[in-house]
Length: 468
Image 1 (cartoon, rainbow, N blue to C red):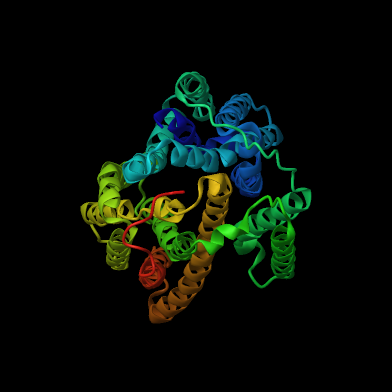
Image 2: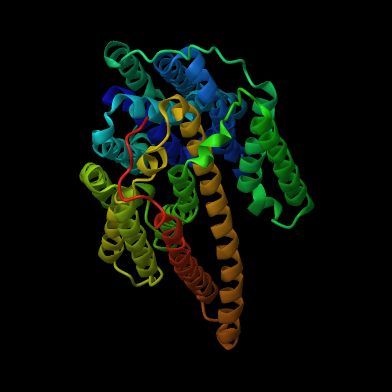
Protein backbone atom coordinates (compact mmCIF):
# COMPACT_ATOMS: atom_id res chain seq x y z
CA UNK A 1 0.00 0.00 0.00
CA UNK A 2 2.82 2.40 0.85
CA UNK A 3 4.39 1.64 -2.53
CA UNK A 4 1.13 2.61 -4.22
CA UNK A 5 0.91 5.84 -2.23
CA UNK A 6 4.26 7.16 -3.48
CA UNK A 7 2.67 8.28 -6.73
CA UNK A 8 -0.28 9.97 -5.02
CA UNK A 9 2.04 11.79 -2.63
CA UNK A 10 4.20 13.03 -5.52
CA UNK A 11 1.23 14.21 -7.58
CA UNK A 12 -0.48 16.01 -4.69
CA UNK A 13 2.78 17.62 -3.56
CA UNK A 14 3.60 18.93 -7.03
CA UNK A 15 0.06 20.08 -7.82
CA UNK A 16 -0.02 22.32 -4.75
CA UNK A 17 3.62 23.46 -4.78
CA UNK A 18 3.28 24.94 -8.28
CA UNK A 19 1.16 27.82 -6.93
CA UNK A 20 4.17 29.12 -4.97
CA UNK A 21 6.22 29.36 -8.18
CA UNK A 22 3.70 31.40 -10.21
CA UNK A 23 5.46 34.76 -9.68
CA UNK A 24 8.98 33.63 -10.70
CA UNK A 25 7.59 31.74 -13.71
CA UNK A 26 5.81 34.93 -14.86
CA UNK A 27 9.11 36.79 -14.65
CA UNK A 28 11.16 34.13 -16.44
CA UNK A 29 8.71 33.71 -19.33
CA UNK A 30 7.75 37.39 -19.46
CA UNK A 31 4.01 36.72 -19.37
CA UNK A 32 0.97 38.10 -17.59
CA UNK A 33 -1.54 36.56 -15.18
CA UNK A 34 -3.81 35.39 -18.01
CA UNK A 35 -0.94 33.51 -19.64
CA UNK A 36 0.51 31.91 -16.54
CA UNK A 37 -2.96 30.80 -15.44
CA UNK A 38 -2.80 28.10 -18.10
CA UNK A 39 -0.02 26.36 -16.17
CA UNK A 40 -2.68 25.39 -13.62
CA UNK A 41 -5.72 25.32 -15.91
CA UNK A 42 -4.11 22.98 -18.45
CA UNK A 43 -3.24 20.51 -15.68
CA UNK A 44 -6.76 20.67 -14.24
CA UNK A 45 -8.44 20.10 -17.62
CA UNK A 46 -6.12 17.36 -18.88
CA UNK A 47 -6.26 15.53 -15.55
CA UNK A 48 -10.04 15.75 -15.36
CA UNK A 49 -10.55 14.63 -18.97
CA UNK A 50 -8.40 11.51 -18.63
CA UNK A 51 -10.03 10.20 -15.42
CA UNK A 52 -13.02 8.56 -17.21
CA UNK A 53 -10.54 6.31 -19.05
CA UNK A 54 -9.00 4.93 -15.85
CA UNK A 55 -11.52 2.12 -15.36
CA UNK A 56 -11.20 0.76 -18.90
CA UNK A 57 -7.40 1.10 -18.89
CA UNK A 58 -7.18 -0.65 -15.51
CA UNK A 59 -9.23 -3.58 -16.83
CA UNK A 60 -7.25 -3.69 -20.07
CA UNK A 61 -3.68 -3.31 -18.77
CA UNK A 62 -3.98 -4.39 -15.16
CA UNK A 63 -3.80 -1.92 -12.30
CA UNK A 64 -0.11 -2.46 -11.48
CA UNK A 65 1.03 -1.90 -15.05
CA UNK A 66 -1.22 1.15 -15.41
CA UNK A 67 0.13 2.59 -12.15
CA UNK A 68 3.72 2.18 -13.37
CA UNK A 69 2.81 3.94 -16.62
CA UNK A 70 1.26 6.77 -14.58
CA UNK A 71 4.48 7.14 -12.58
CA UNK A 72 6.57 7.14 -15.74
CA UNK A 73 4.42 9.70 -17.58
CA UNK A 74 4.19 12.00 -14.55
CA UNK A 75 7.94 11.83 -13.91
CA UNK A 76 8.86 12.48 -17.56
CA UNK A 77 6.38 15.37 -17.62
CA UNK A 78 7.99 16.79 -14.48
CA UNK A 79 11.48 16.68 -16.01
CA UNK A 80 10.17 18.43 -19.13
CA UNK A 81 8.53 21.09 -16.92
CA UNK A 82 11.88 21.70 -15.23
CA UNK A 83 13.59 21.97 -18.64
CA UNK A 84 10.90 24.19 -20.23
CA UNK A 85 12.26 27.06 -22.31
CA UNK A 86 9.00 28.93 -22.95
CA UNK A 87 5.52 29.29 -21.53
CA UNK A 88 4.12 27.09 -24.30
CA UNK A 89 6.60 24.29 -23.59
CA UNK A 90 5.79 24.48 -19.87
CA UNK A 91 2.04 24.21 -20.54
CA UNK A 92 2.60 21.24 -22.87
CA UNK A 93 4.73 19.51 -20.22
CA UNK A 94 2.03 20.18 -17.60
CA UNK A 95 -0.52 18.46 -19.85
CA UNK A 96 1.78 15.43 -20.05
CA UNK A 97 2.14 15.50 -16.26
CA UNK A 98 -1.63 15.58 -15.89
CA UNK A 99 -2.11 12.48 -18.04
CA UNK A 100 -0.23 10.52 -15.38
CA UNK A 101 -1.38 12.53 -12.36
CA UNK A 102 -5.07 12.48 -13.33
CA UNK A 103 -5.12 8.69 -13.56
CA UNK A 104 -3.10 8.24 -10.37
CA UNK A 105 -5.88 8.78 -7.83
CA UNK A 106 -8.55 6.38 -9.18
CA UNK A 107 -5.93 3.74 -10.00
CA UNK A 108 -4.36 3.84 -6.53
CA UNK A 109 -7.78 3.79 -4.84
CA UNK A 110 -8.79 0.75 -6.88
CA UNK A 111 -5.53 -1.03 -5.93
CA UNK A 112 -5.96 -0.25 -2.24
CA UNK A 113 -9.50 -1.62 -2.19
CA UNK A 114 -8.15 -4.84 -3.67
CA UNK A 115 -5.07 -5.06 -1.40
CA UNK A 116 -6.54 -4.29 2.03
CA UNK A 117 -8.78 -6.88 3.75
CA UNK A 118 -12.32 -5.63 4.27
CA UNK A 119 -12.11 -5.74 8.07
CA UNK A 120 -8.98 -3.54 7.99
CA UNK A 121 -10.15 -1.11 5.30
CA UNK A 122 -10.66 1.74 7.75
CA UNK A 123 -7.05 1.59 8.92
CA UNK A 124 -5.79 1.34 5.35
CA UNK A 125 -7.81 4.29 4.14
CA UNK A 126 -6.73 6.23 7.22
CA UNK A 127 -3.15 5.95 5.99
CA UNK A 128 -4.33 6.93 2.51
CA UNK A 129 -6.09 9.99 3.96
CA UNK A 130 -2.96 10.97 5.88
CA UNK A 131 -0.95 11.08 2.63
CA UNK A 132 -3.67 13.09 0.88
CA UNK A 133 -3.59 15.73 3.63
CA UNK A 134 0.12 15.90 4.47
CA UNK A 135 1.30 16.32 0.85
CA UNK A 136 -0.75 19.49 0.13
CA UNK A 137 0.19 20.84 3.56
CA UNK A 138 3.91 20.37 2.93
CA UNK A 139 3.68 21.84 -0.57
CA UNK A 140 3.67 25.60 0.23
CA UNK A 141 6.56 25.28 2.69
CA UNK A 142 8.69 23.02 0.49
CA UNK A 143 7.82 25.03 -2.60
CA UNK A 144 8.68 28.28 -0.83
CA UNK A 145 12.07 26.91 0.26
CA UNK A 146 12.94 25.74 -3.26
CA UNK A 147 11.81 28.98 -4.90
CA UNK A 148 13.54 31.22 -2.38
CA UNK A 149 16.83 29.37 -1.90
CA UNK A 150 17.30 27.20 -5.03
CA UNK A 151 15.22 27.65 -8.20
CA UNK A 152 11.56 27.24 -9.13
CA UNK A 153 12.49 24.47 -11.60
CA UNK A 154 13.36 22.21 -8.66
CA UNK A 155 9.66 22.06 -7.75
CA UNK A 156 9.37 19.79 -10.80
CA UNK A 157 12.85 18.27 -10.83
CA UNK A 158 12.46 16.87 -7.31
CA UNK A 159 9.90 14.44 -8.76
CA UNK A 160 12.61 12.60 -10.70
CA UNK A 161 14.19 10.74 -7.74
CA UNK A 162 10.79 10.24 -6.11
CA UNK A 163 9.36 8.78 -9.32
CA UNK A 164 12.33 6.48 -9.94
CA UNK A 165 12.39 5.15 -6.37
CA UNK A 166 8.61 4.82 -6.34
CA UNK A 167 8.65 2.80 -9.58
CA UNK A 168 11.39 0.45 -8.32
CA UNK A 169 9.56 -0.15 -5.03
CA UNK A 170 6.26 -0.69 -6.85
CA UNK A 171 7.78 -3.23 -9.26
CA UNK A 172 9.23 -5.27 -6.40
CA UNK A 173 6.40 -5.07 -3.84
CA UNK A 174 3.02 -4.53 -5.52
CA UNK A 175 1.08 -7.70 -6.32
CA UNK A 176 -0.02 -8.40 -9.85
CA UNK A 177 -3.58 -7.30 -10.54
CA UNK A 178 -5.04 -9.46 -13.30
CA UNK A 179 -6.48 -7.87 -16.38
CA UNK A 180 -10.17 -8.28 -17.05
CA UNK A 181 -10.66 -11.67 -18.73
CA UNK A 182 -13.55 -10.30 -20.79
CA UNK A 183 -11.34 -7.93 -22.82
CA UNK A 184 -14.20 -5.45 -23.22
CA UNK A 185 -14.19 -3.14 -26.27
CA UNK A 186 -13.42 0.53 -25.88
CA UNK A 187 -16.52 2.72 -25.56
CA UNK A 188 -15.53 5.43 -28.04
CA UNK A 189 -18.84 7.38 -28.00
CA UNK A 190 -18.81 7.35 -24.20
CA UNK A 191 -15.17 8.46 -24.11
CA UNK A 192 -15.76 11.37 -26.51
CA UNK A 193 -18.87 12.66 -24.72
CA UNK A 194 -17.33 12.17 -21.25
CA UNK A 195 -14.13 13.98 -22.24
CA UNK A 196 -15.95 16.89 -23.86
CA UNK A 197 -18.66 17.13 -21.20
CA UNK A 198 -16.55 16.82 -18.05
CA UNK A 199 -13.62 18.73 -19.53
CA UNK A 200 -15.84 21.56 -20.73
CA UNK A 201 -17.59 21.77 -17.38
CA UNK A 202 -14.28 21.97 -15.50
CA UNK A 203 -13.12 24.68 -17.92
CA UNK A 204 -16.19 26.89 -17.62
CA UNK A 205 -16.16 26.55 -13.82
CA UNK A 206 -12.56 27.75 -13.77
CA UNK A 207 -13.29 30.63 -16.18
CA UNK A 208 -16.74 31.71 -14.99
CA UNK A 209 -15.51 34.49 -12.74
CA UNK A 210 -13.34 35.90 -15.53
CA UNK A 211 -16.03 35.68 -18.21
CA UNK A 212 -18.95 36.62 -15.95
CA UNK A 213 -21.46 33.99 -14.87
CA UNK A 214 -24.29 35.52 -16.89
CA UNK A 215 -22.20 36.22 -19.99
CA UNK A 216 -23.08 34.63 -23.31
CA UNK A 217 -19.88 32.56 -23.40
CA UNK A 218 -20.50 31.09 -19.93
CA UNK A 219 -24.19 30.32 -20.47
CA UNK A 220 -23.66 28.77 -23.92
CA UNK A 221 -20.73 26.64 -22.68
CA UNK A 222 -22.72 25.43 -19.67
CA UNK A 223 -25.72 24.55 -21.85
CA UNK A 224 -23.47 22.71 -24.31
CA UNK A 225 -21.77 20.76 -21.51
CA UNK A 226 -25.08 19.76 -19.92
CA UNK A 227 -26.35 18.62 -23.33
CA UNK A 228 -23.20 16.58 -24.00
CA UNK A 229 -23.33 14.99 -20.53
CA UNK A 230 -27.01 14.16 -21.08
CA UNK A 231 -26.01 12.39 -24.29
CA UNK A 232 -23.22 10.65 -22.37
CA UNK A 233 -25.73 9.28 -19.83
CA UNK A 234 -27.98 7.97 -22.61
CA UNK A 235 -25.00 6.31 -24.34
CA UNK A 236 -23.76 4.67 -21.13
CA UNK A 237 -27.19 3.41 -20.09
CA UNK A 238 -27.67 1.84 -23.52
CA UNK A 239 -24.20 0.31 -23.76
CA UNK A 240 -23.40 -3.29 -22.85
CA UNK A 241 -19.78 -2.26 -22.11
CA UNK A 242 -19.97 1.34 -20.79
CA UNK A 243 -16.87 3.44 -20.13
CA UNK A 244 -18.31 4.53 -16.76
CA UNK A 245 -20.80 2.08 -15.30
CA UNK A 246 -23.60 4.31 -14.01
CA UNK A 247 -25.13 1.30 -12.27
CA UNK A 248 -22.87 2.10 -9.31
CA UNK A 249 -25.46 4.72 -8.36
CA UNK A 250 -27.94 1.88 -7.73
CA UNK A 251 -25.78 1.01 -4.70
CA UNK A 252 -27.21 3.18 -1.86
CA UNK A 253 -23.96 3.72 0.06
CA UNK A 254 -22.22 5.05 -3.07
CA UNK A 255 -25.08 7.41 -3.93
CA UNK A 256 -25.59 8.75 -0.39
CA UNK A 257 -21.85 9.37 0.04
CA UNK A 258 -21.62 11.26 -3.24
CA UNK A 259 -24.59 13.41 -2.19
CA UNK A 260 -22.91 14.41 1.06
CA UNK A 261 -19.59 14.99 -0.73
CA UNK A 262 -21.12 18.05 -2.43
CA UNK A 263 -21.60 20.26 0.68
CA UNK A 264 -18.53 18.83 2.43
CA UNK A 265 -16.18 19.57 -0.47
CA UNK A 266 -17.63 23.04 -0.88
CA UNK A 267 -17.03 23.70 2.79
CA UNK A 268 -13.55 22.22 2.70
CA UNK A 269 -12.31 24.23 -0.26
CA UNK A 270 -13.92 27.48 0.94
CA UNK A 271 -11.55 27.40 3.91
CA UNK A 272 -8.50 25.90 2.17
CA UNK A 273 -8.76 28.52 -0.57
CA UNK A 274 -9.73 31.69 1.31
CA UNK A 275 -7.86 31.44 4.61
CA UNK A 276 -4.45 31.56 2.82
CA UNK A 277 -5.72 34.49 0.71
CA UNK A 278 -6.74 36.31 3.90
CA UNK A 279 -3.40 35.61 5.59
CA UNK A 280 -1.31 36.75 2.62
CA UNK A 281 -3.38 39.57 1.12
CA UNK A 282 -4.86 41.06 4.29
CA UNK A 283 -2.43 40.08 7.06
CA UNK A 284 0.66 40.45 4.85
CA UNK A 285 2.12 37.00 5.53
CA UNK A 286 4.42 35.26 3.06
CA UNK A 287 3.74 31.92 1.37
CA UNK A 288 6.07 30.03 3.70
CA UNK A 289 4.60 31.66 6.82
CA UNK A 290 1.11 30.83 5.60
CA UNK A 291 2.10 27.25 4.91
CA UNK A 292 3.59 26.92 8.40
CA UNK A 293 0.40 28.28 9.97
CA UNK A 294 -1.79 25.90 7.95
CA UNK A 295 0.46 22.90 8.61
CA UNK A 296 -0.71 22.06 12.19
CA UNK A 297 -4.26 21.55 10.90
CA UNK A 298 -3.04 19.20 8.18
CA UNK A 299 -0.84 17.43 10.72
CA UNK A 300 -3.86 16.98 13.00
CA UNK A 301 -5.81 15.41 10.14
CA UNK A 302 -2.88 13.24 9.13
CA UNK A 303 -2.14 11.96 12.64
CA UNK A 304 -5.82 11.38 13.40
CA UNK A 305 -6.62 9.61 10.10
CA UNK A 306 -5.23 6.18 11.12
CA UNK A 307 -7.10 6.42 14.44
CA UNK A 308 -10.27 7.39 12.59
CA UNK A 309 -9.69 4.43 10.28
CA UNK A 310 -9.70 2.05 13.24
CA UNK A 311 -12.88 3.69 14.52
CA UNK A 312 -14.41 3.08 11.10
CA UNK A 313 -13.47 -0.60 11.24
CA UNK A 314 -15.26 -0.82 14.59
CA UNK A 315 -18.28 1.47 14.25
CA UNK A 316 -18.82 1.92 10.49
CA UNK A 317 -19.37 5.19 8.58
CA UNK A 318 -22.64 6.63 9.91
CA UNK A 319 -21.64 7.84 13.39
CA UNK A 320 -18.28 9.12 12.16
CA UNK A 321 -19.87 11.06 9.31
CA UNK A 322 -22.44 12.68 11.58
CA UNK A 323 -19.79 13.68 14.13
CA UNK A 324 -17.38 14.94 11.47
CA UNK A 325 -20.04 17.00 9.68
CA UNK A 326 -21.20 18.66 12.91
CA UNK A 327 -17.64 19.48 14.02
CA UNK A 328 -16.78 20.79 10.54
CA UNK A 329 -19.85 23.04 10.54
CA UNK A 330 -19.05 24.39 14.02
CA UNK A 331 -15.42 25.17 13.19
CA UNK A 332 -16.46 26.87 9.94
CA UNK A 333 -18.92 28.95 11.95
CA UNK A 334 -16.06 29.91 14.30
CA UNK A 335 -14.09 31.13 11.28
CA UNK A 336 -17.00 33.42 10.40
CA UNK A 337 -15.85 35.49 13.38
CA UNK A 338 -12.41 36.17 11.87
CA UNK A 339 -11.28 39.81 11.97
CA UNK A 340 -8.18 41.87 11.36
CA UNK A 341 -7.45 41.60 15.08
CA UNK A 342 -7.91 37.81 15.41
CA UNK A 343 -4.66 36.34 16.71
CA UNK A 344 -2.75 33.83 14.61
CA UNK A 345 -2.90 31.40 17.53
CA UNK A 346 -6.70 31.51 17.51
CA UNK A 347 -6.85 30.96 13.74
CA UNK A 348 -4.45 28.03 14.08
CA UNK A 349 -6.60 26.48 16.83
CA UNK A 350 -9.76 26.82 14.73
CA UNK A 351 -8.00 25.18 11.79
CA UNK A 352 -6.67 22.33 13.96
CA UNK A 353 -10.20 21.56 15.18
CA UNK A 354 -11.34 21.65 11.60
CA UNK A 355 -8.52 19.29 10.65
CA UNK A 356 -9.75 16.80 13.24
CA UNK A 357 -13.25 17.10 11.77
CA UNK A 358 -11.94 16.29 8.30
CA UNK A 359 -10.15 13.26 9.71
CA UNK A 360 -13.51 11.98 10.95
CA UNK A 361 -15.02 11.93 7.45
CA UNK A 362 -14.41 8.49 5.85
CA UNK A 363 -15.65 9.55 2.42
CA UNK A 364 -13.73 7.09 0.25
CA UNK A 365 -14.42 4.19 2.59
CA UNK A 366 -18.15 4.91 2.84
CA UNK A 367 -18.51 5.37 -0.93
CA UNK A 368 -16.71 2.17 -1.86
CA UNK A 369 -17.85 -0.05 1.02
CA UNK A 370 -20.46 -2.04 -0.92
CA UNK A 371 -19.00 -1.83 -4.45
CA UNK A 372 -18.43 -5.30 -5.96
CA UNK A 373 -14.80 -5.92 -6.87
CA UNK A 374 -15.43 -6.11 -10.64
CA UNK A 375 -16.83 -2.55 -10.49
CA UNK A 376 -14.08 -1.02 -8.31
CA UNK A 377 -12.09 0.62 -11.11
CA UNK A 378 -15.16 2.25 -12.66
CA UNK A 379 -16.50 3.39 -9.26
CA UNK A 380 -13.21 5.03 -8.23
CA UNK A 381 -13.12 6.86 -11.58
CA UNK A 382 -16.65 8.16 -11.01
CA UNK A 383 -15.80 9.26 -7.46
CA UNK A 384 -12.69 11.13 -8.66
CA UNK A 385 -14.63 12.93 -11.41
CA UNK A 386 -17.37 14.04 -9.04
CA UNK A 387 -14.84 15.28 -6.47
CA UNK A 388 -13.08 17.39 -9.12
CA UNK A 389 -16.34 18.86 -10.37
CA UNK A 390 -17.63 19.64 -6.88
CA UNK A 391 -14.32 21.25 -5.88
CA UNK A 392 -14.36 23.49 -8.97
CA UNK A 393 -18.04 24.32 -8.52
CA UNK A 394 -17.55 25.09 -4.82
CA UNK A 395 -14.67 27.50 -5.43
CA UNK A 396 -16.59 29.19 -8.27
CA UNK A 397 -19.74 29.59 -6.14
CA UNK A 398 -17.84 30.96 -3.17
CA UNK A 399 -15.95 33.38 -5.44
CA UNK A 400 -19.25 34.75 -6.77
CA UNK A 401 -20.61 35.13 -3.24
CA UNK A 402 -17.41 36.78 -1.99
CA UNK A 403 -17.41 39.23 -4.90
CA UNK A 404 -21.05 40.19 -4.39
CA UNK A 405 -20.70 40.63 -0.63
CA UNK A 406 -17.47 42.59 -1.10
CA UNK A 407 -19.28 44.99 -3.45
CA UNK A 408 -22.09 45.38 -0.91
CA UNK A 409 -19.81 46.01 2.08
CA UNK A 410 -17.54 48.37 0.12
CA UNK A 411 -20.53 50.53 -0.89
CA UNK A 412 -21.92 50.54 2.65
CA UNK A 413 -18.60 51.43 4.31
CA UNK A 414 -17.80 54.04 1.66
CA UNK A 415 -21.09 55.80 2.37
CA UNK A 416 -20.36 55.77 6.09
CA UNK A 417 -16.95 57.45 5.70
CA UNK A 418 -17.71 59.81 2.79
CA UNK A 419 -17.04 62.87 4.92
CA UNK A 420 -13.58 61.59 5.87
CA UNK A 421 -12.50 60.51 2.40
CA UNK A 422 -9.43 62.74 2.56
CA UNK A 423 -7.92 60.80 5.49
CA UNK A 424 -4.70 59.16 4.25
CA UNK A 425 -4.99 55.38 3.83
CA UNK A 426 -8.74 55.33 4.38
CA UNK A 427 -9.64 53.73 1.01
CA UNK A 428 -7.21 50.90 1.76
CA UNK A 429 -8.74 50.35 5.20
CA UNK A 430 -12.22 50.29 3.67
CA UNK A 431 -11.09 47.69 1.11
CA UNK A 432 -9.53 45.55 3.84
CA UNK A 433 -12.53 45.70 6.13
CA UNK A 434 -14.92 45.01 3.25
CA UNK A 435 -12.98 41.89 2.31
CA UNK A 436 -12.98 40.65 5.91
CA UNK A 437 -16.73 41.19 6.26
CA UNK A 438 -17.28 39.38 2.96
CA UNK A 439 -15.15 36.49 4.18
CA UNK A 440 -17.24 36.29 7.34
CA UNK A 441 -20.38 36.04 5.21
CA UNK A 442 -18.86 33.26 3.09
CA UNK A 443 -17.84 31.20 6.13
CA UNK A 444 -21.22 31.73 7.78
CA UNK A 445 -23.07 30.52 4.68
CA UNK A 446 -20.64 27.65 4.26
CA UNK A 447 -21.28 26.42 7.80
CA UNK A 448 -24.98 26.15 6.92
CA UNK A 449 -24.23 24.40 3.62
CA UNK A 450 -22.11 21.80 5.44
CA UNK A 451 -25.07 20.92 7.68
CA UNK A 452 -26.99 19.82 4.56
CA UNK A 453 -24.65 16.81 4.45
CA UNK A 454 -26.37 15.48 7.59
CA UNK A 455 -29.38 14.44 5.50
CA UNK A 456 -27.69 11.79 3.29
CA UNK A 457 -25.40 10.84 6.21
CA UNK A 458 -28.45 9.68 8.20
CA UNK A 459 -29.16 7.10 5.48
CA UNK A 460 -25.73 5.48 5.72
CA UNK A 461 -25.58 2.14 7.48
CA UNK A 462 -23.92 1.79 10.86
CA UNK A 463 -21.76 -1.01 9.53
CA UNK A 464 -20.91 -1.92 5.96
CA UNK A 465 -21.36 -5.42 4.66
CA UNK A 466 -18.50 -7.54 3.32
CA UNK A 467 -17.42 -6.45 -0.15
CA UNK A 468 -18.53 -9.17 -2.62
